[in-house]
Length: 39
Image (cartoon, rainbow, N blue to C red; front, top):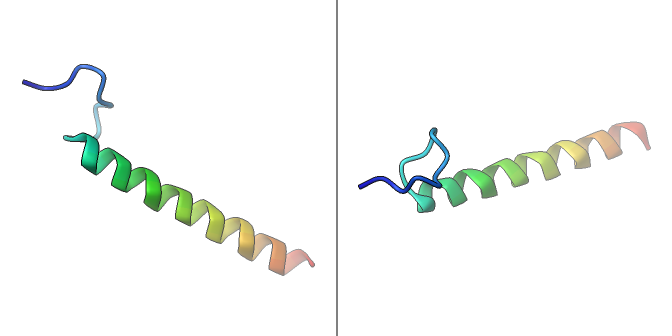
């Protein structure tokens, strides 16, 4: 049985949190590079 609260693009909560951590790491990297470029 599938959890109804889970977003449609992931199959489990573990996968959801893994994607979330990767997404946050990418954002942090992009903001870091943006800051270094414009300092």
